[in-house]
Image 1 (spheres, rainbow, N blue to C red):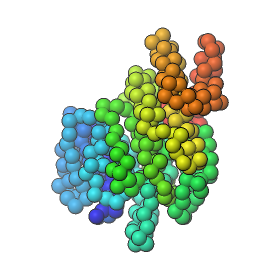
Image 2: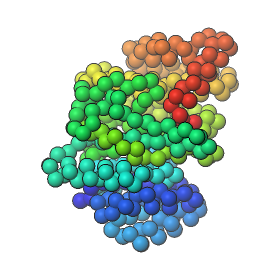
Image 3: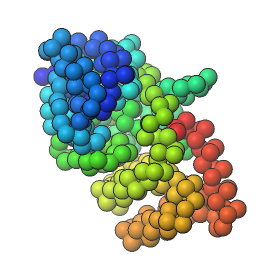
Image 4: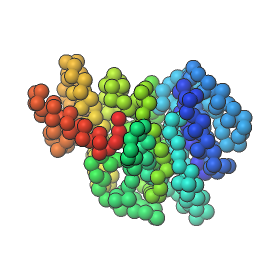
Length: 338
């Protein structure tokens, strides 16, 4: 069995996928790279197959009809043979020294007959044109150098949360919890880092800047203008997060607090984008989203709607919307997304 399976979802990725793959090859025989060509129309398939031919014991390729990022991850989960599972998008890459340190840690777990459900590491926003590269670290929240549970964690700061780039899971846990990401939907990474958490009992944090998250392509899904065009998909993921996990059933108070925190961030983004679009149709969708949350879970509604951020983004009228947008722009700078 391989130590780590890395799925690389690819859609028309010919211009940058090589850099991603080359950064992962130093893992050698401990790792399998699952390149999923998700219905590309360029040279992605040929590049993937070339790597599989050159590295037959490391690289596997899968060619499928276009199903979106989530279906590419689903294909990875179905076919992974590694003990642990990581997603690396084809326009991102990993730091080789941090990568080797992570693999060494996983090898030690196996040698000591220990397993963890989730490993967390840092990620770097590689934002094109930015002088300062924001690094998302977790040393203020998570213990280092030992296996721990949710009860050993501290409080996450506003704007500090687990993105897909920060986590790898035990592969069998993803299968056991039945994670199935929706097809043809953007922003499903929020489901990937949210739905399995109630099944995660043992965690390990390694304080290395492992994942390099590239932001800057004009067609990138986190560009604000594109997020507004795809707002229905953002709302769909927002609702699926609420439907997939019953927060009142989460036994750990600290995990409950964290998951509420993550859900709040996603909901704030949904609402602000609806406000930013400034169309009557989308302002109606904002009302509908709040109504939906209220119908689903009245306690959750009160937590989200009347928390500090919820109150700030729901100030009435045009002046209220201006304040909301101002708060959003500040949060963009703090978090570093878009």
